[in-house]
Image (cartoon, rainbow, N blue to C red; front, side, top):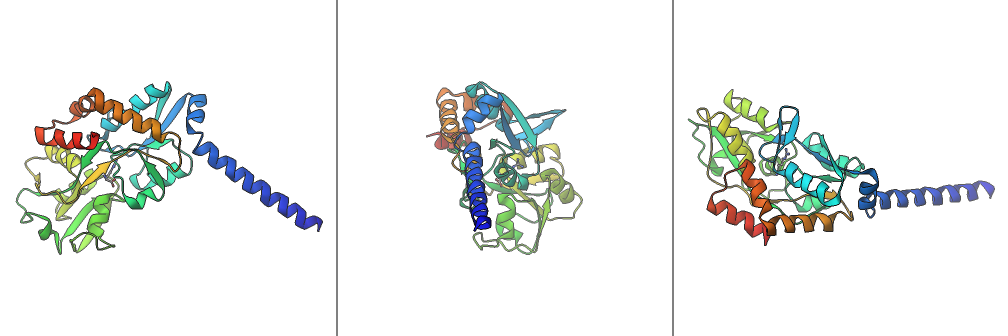
Length: 272
Ligand code: ARG
């Protein structure tokens, strides 16, 4: 009897401490951030123009948005650079307050995180060697394709759920998009599938060897990810709205990419 009571009390205590742990990670995120004086953002800085290393510093569109968020809350921004496929597990282990990583809001990810309103329209695109016979998505069938591990490009090419219409021979997964491109140049993969703007940046470093095809394989939107139920979400949504309304979002994006008219109306479609 005594034993059972102790067990019941212990179980009750565990449940209580689990509840308080959840509360401190989610509903009271803002209190926690303010009392720490800092907000922790995680990213994967292998994704120019959204996040990349410039010497020792991590810079890019997502960094500028994150700095604006820290300013809005009146705290410092701390940035941690980790593997792309570790971002969501690490967020849910309480190691960060939010993810800003050119991350596409997908229903699958939404099971584990809350997404802000979208801030950027994107798509997957194909990079091939300049002399490649691959001219579009149909030509990927039977080919070996390089992707960044755990990205929507990986999901698209792996096509486990048969949601895309490609049937590639093999998907090679890399920690960095840049490594996939090196293997493309070395002839170890036939194509690389990666987000459109990062593809352009990668191609601009080797324009004589590789090219990006015009065809857009998917329609995606980037959003900031937060733990489920985080009270940070309305603040981030408001920030994105403010940056859009004030023209600051275009200013930030314009620091890293030249948007032509068509593209900037695409970015605005997200804003509205
Ligand atoms: N948009 C793609 C996705 O969400 C790729 C993002 C890769 N981001 C990065 N920082 N490496 O899966």
